[in-house]
Length: 165
Length: 199
Image 1: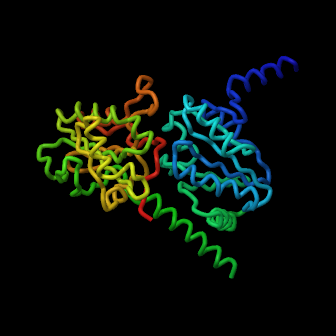
Image 2 (image 1 turned 180 degrees about the horizontal axis):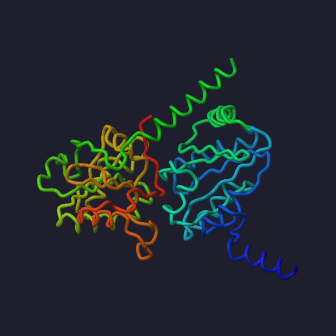
Image 3 (image 1 turned 90 degrees about the horizontal axis):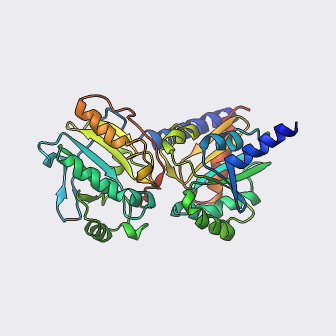
């Protein structure tokens, strides 16, 4: 048992390196296993793919933060997935301290994009911002920037009413 | 009544997404020609290249960090393949009112500073990129001499580090065209900056 725990902790240490608050995944496979393919139960989860260098993404962040106060469905979880490069980790850390303190932020630095973008959604061309919404085993992928909070909740509510759960 | 509304909503979603996602070229489609201004104040059209074996059309810009990371590689590819009759044309699709860095004047500056060895063209009415289906910068469309789209996607598999590139998707696709075979892969994906569209 002790050996197993040791192995598990070793695994966590090798696959993710904590930078400040956020975990860093250098491999999409690990990210998929530990973040995407997790059983979130009844929680609606919104993953927002963004980067500090992406102006429309940064403009969109305040809107997404507002969804915590008025969630499209409850329970609700918001996870920011930064696609900043590994070498920009200081810039990302500073940005998080200034703008995203207290929010869930994950850093995904796997730059073999062609290997994994299609596993998020086969239609994703790779432009950001983009959001993936997860509810039970259903997924909604949105490759666009939201312009106001009502657009987020409307898109999600229309989708929820269209899926059978 | 609720059921009907639901059907309408679902219909709306699928129409909405199909418009957003299916617009633009797929492999095998014939690409449109264009008449657009270049930073050298000449006008560019594909039909002016009489003996071309193909065209490398890259939607790119000044402002996107990913486009900037690829500037030198784009220049090298342009130099290397024009000798073989494959002409590279870079088209900036962004609205400079949203991204002033992507204005025609700033394009001229960048082309000069970086000694671009290819036409740097301005999609000034923002029509061409949407016909092609470009969604981001950089976004590559490789056309054969009949303007048939043969490859869509990324330049290679490592935007950040040229020395760590394992697969040169675009160059491999050009080599396939030269051999008369289908590129493999024909479509690749990469992160890029969304195109800045006039509101």
